[in-house]
Length: 80
Image (cartoon, rainbow, N blue to C red; front, side, top):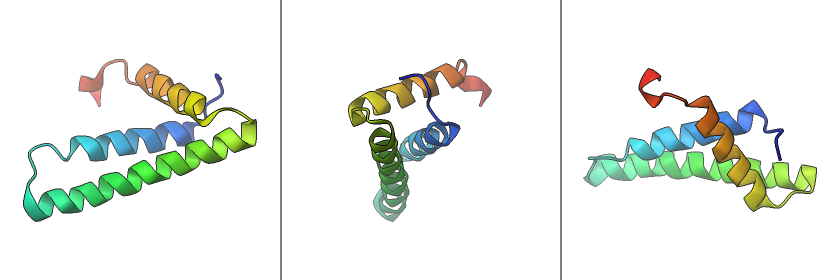
């Protein structure tokens, strides 16, 4: 699978950013950030499922393709 829509990559990137923001948080701040991460993660999974259904592809294959595409767009994470 090579045709990954930019929207899927954007959603995955957002979920990864929200996950990274959990580092060092505790208590209520952690709980709030965890809710943001879970919402972003849920959006990714819904989009992956929809893409898999639309293309007749296994959802796991779509998920892996999205992650590969994201890594390719992030050649140097220090730049972002």
